[in-house]
Amino acid sequence: MKISFARAAMPGTGAVVAAVTEGAKLNGFAYKLDQKLDGALSRAIKKSYFDGKLGQQLNIIAPSGSRIDEVIIIGLGKASELTELELQKLGGAVYSKTNRAKSGVVHVILDNVAGSGIAASKMAAEIAYGARLRSYRFDKYKTKQKSESKPNIKNLNFLCIGSKAAKDHFRNLDKIVEGVFFTRDLVSEPPNVLYPETLAKEARKLEKLGIAVEVMGENQMRRLGMGALLGVGQGSVRESKLVVMHWRGKAKNRGKLLLSDNPISFIGKGVTFDTGGISIKPSAGMEDMKWDMGGAGVVVGLMKALAGRRAKVNVVGVVGLVENMPGGNAQRPGDIVSSMSGQTIEVLNTDAEGRLVLADALWYTKKRFKPKMMINLATLTGAIIVSLADKYAGLFSNNDVLCDRLSKAGEQVGELVWRLPLSAEYNKMIDSDVADMKNIGGRGAGSITAAQFLQRFVGDTRWAHLDIAGVTWTKTNSPIVPKGGTAFGVRLLDKLVQNHYEDK
Picture (cartoon, rainbow, N blue to C red):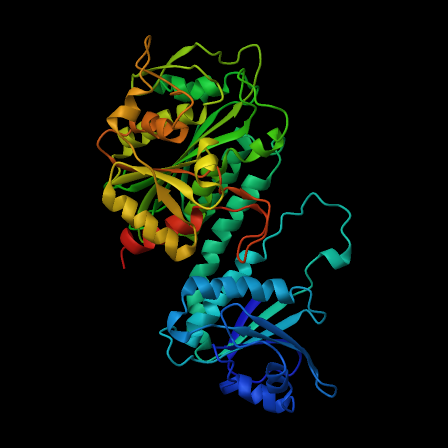
C-alpha cells in the first residue's frame, strides 16, 4: 500500500473518506463533495443515526453518473477532545473499511477542524500512521490464498491543507512503523526458522542503518562468566548468543561500537523457543512459545525505529538469545549456577529461565556501559496474565520518575502499563538455603518475585522491568494491531525516548 499526500482537491475517482465532527455538519471539502454528488451525503446522514461521534462510520454508494465508487464518512467526535492516538485508531478503521476497495484507490479528504489544536496536516499523518500499523500481515508461508482474502488497496491518498507538512510528519512515523513491523515479523516466525543464530543475523541487518552490532557466542560469554544465561541453553543444539546494538545518534561516527557517555539502554529476553526444559510445559499451547523472544524482538525493532528516524540519542540494546530445550545436557532442577555478577543461583524450576538470561544481560549492560537507565522487556511470567490479562503490561521499577514517564508514554500510544510493588519482604521469598538466591519464590506473587530476582542484578542503576507476557500476542484484531504479534513496547519506548531522552 502506497501512502501519499497532496494538496487539497476534489477527488474524481475511487473510494473517498471524509471526516466530520460531532453533530455531523458537513464543512469544507466534505460540503463540496456533497454538492458534487447532488446532496447524497447530507440525505444519507439525515436518514441515518450517524451524528459524527468518534469512530462512527457511514457508508454511501455514490449516485449514478459519478466516477466516485463510494464515500465513507467517519466521525471525529468532539473537536476539543481529539488526540493523536484517536486519529491513529481512525486510520486503522479507515484501512479495515477500505482495504477491499475495488478500484484499489482510496482518497481521504481533510480540512482544519475548528476547535481542535491539531492541524489538518498532522491529522492526515496520524491517520496514515494508524492505517499503516493496521495493514500488517504475516502470510509469507501461505501458498494458496484466494484473491478475495487479500487486501486490494494499492494507494491511500491524503488530500489536505499543508500536504508537505503532512508528508514531513509522516516520514518519521513511518520509520516507527518499520520498527514495529520488524518486531512483528520476528515474533511471528516459526521456531525452526528463528533461533539464536538466525535472530542474531536479523539484528545484523541494522548495520545498514548505522547501528553497530556485536554478536557474542558461547565461548565469549563463558569467559565473561555468564553461567546463568548459558545454563538455560545448554540442552539445545542451537548455540546461545548475546547481541549488543549501539545507536550513537549524538555522534558523527555512528557505525562504531564505542562507549558513549552514559547511554540509555534496553535489554530483552530472547528465548526463541521455550519448552520449559526438564520442567517441561504441557503440550497444549506450547506452540505459542515461539514468541517467548518477544522482549528481544521489541528491543531489535526499537533500535530499527530509532535509527530509521535518526533519533538524536545514544542507545544500547542488548538481547540474550537462547533456546530452552530438554536433552542429555539440559539444566536440571537443583543445579546451582554462577552468574556474571558472581552471585549464585539455585535453579529449582528450569521453566523460570528468562530471569536467568536477563540476569547476565543486565549485569553485562550495567558493568560495560554504565547507562543512565536500563529498561528490560520480557515475556517473563504467566502470573502477570493472571493479574492483568492482555490489557496492561506489568511494570516494576526502583525509580518513581522512570515509572511515571513510562506510564504517561504508554497512555499516549495506547500501550498501557501497570506498576506492581517491590519490597524487602518479597525479596526474602527468593533467598536460597544453599545459594545466594533461587530462581522461583513459590506459588504466590510470581511476577513480583521474578522482578525481585532481576533487581538483584541492576545495583543502583535506574531500572524498570516490563513483563509483557500478556500483551506480546493477540488473537483478536484491534484498530491499529491486527491479530498476531503486537510489537507492544516499540511505540511505547520510542515515545519515552522522544519525550525525555532525545536532543531536540
